[in-house]
Amino acid sequence: MQNKGVASYLTVIFMALVATLVIAVIQSRLITGIYRQRALSDTLKSSYGAESKIYDILAKVIYYGATPPSGTETLPDGTELNFIFQTISPDIQRVIVTAERPFAVNKIIADRQFNITGGVDKVEMILALDCTGSMGAKADPSCSGSDCISKMTAQKNAVKHFLQTIDAMVEKDKIYTGLAVFAGGLELGTTLNDAQWFTINGGLPTRQIATPTNDYDKLLSILETGLQTNRENSPACCFAASGFRNADCQLETRGTSVGSGYAFINDYFKNNPIPEDQVVKRFEIVVTDGLPNSRNLEYPDCPFTDFSPSPPPPPYCREPMLPPYDSYASACVKEAKNYLRCTLADQEQNIDEFPASLQPFSGLRDVENSAYGVVVYGGVPNDVREIFLKYAGPENQNYFETENANNLTNILEDILSDIIETTLKITIKREAP
Image 1 (cartoon, helix red, strand yellow):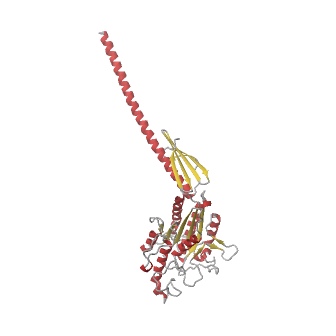
Image 2: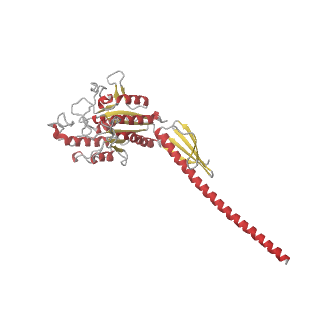
């Protein structure tokens, strides 16, 4: 009996040990599973936090010239981020972000290189700005009171921000920017210009011209003086501060010839070919607050399409149209639209809207040059919008439209971001911490 009691006691102890072992194994598996889940969760969180932050850094540093971050930062979910910014070479900058959580560490490295595949030696872009009389109207049509600014002021602010952003970039020495102005179309036999370089102090020894340069202090200084609140007090638009036209300035200011902005840029790039030993990316940007209603009659590369057999004698295509020339108003607008098509379309795009007698007819813009169009106008007609969407490619991404000129700053910022993207090579990789 005593032996049976001992055996039973030992059996109970053994069973207890087995049960304890089983429970321990189960608990261990549960705890291991929990830690694995937490590790996986922390890995995902740290990876997501690092990637999100690195994209945010790249956007700010690369596109907007922000100061690279340094040190550490704690995200709301507890992730600890450590930043390192390195200059590998004059063309390559590196951002390293290490993300730490209790059960995971992630390290992500991003390199930004100015030269894309094949190498880009220089970027050249020209902005053609609107100098028509309507630029003196309110930037925001709904604004009331003394704080409202003009479209001209909004245009100036936007271009200023554009230039300052480039000036803050590491690669600014390779980015050349020029400023031009345009307004009305030209009549036959005129000595005026429908577009010209942004100029201040014309006719004086202190004259300055905003031809393409990487001297952004110079461009900003010329811009500050050249554009004021409206056409009549903006020296770049051929008017003195007193409101009187500068006698030595040759810009035609009546009407709106949007195509003249592109024609001016096309001609400059055509007359200044890219050296054979260089790779240069070129961009054309035209900002206007009006619809095309006149054109340059002294521009033979874009033939007449609606005047038959030739345009009327001056003064034609002026606003308001007066007898006997008001009968030509409709033809003037058609000519102006086709002039825009001619100067905006590239050399591989056939202009289907031209009459059969001129077909086939392709545009004048070099196919290697990218074009952007910005229209500040409420209620842009569909046919005008379609001109930009069709010919300012690619894929309808290079046309911007707004009724409020205060949006110009963001629009030009988006255009600059797009330009920089096409000339940068971004490499992002994970590395063992």
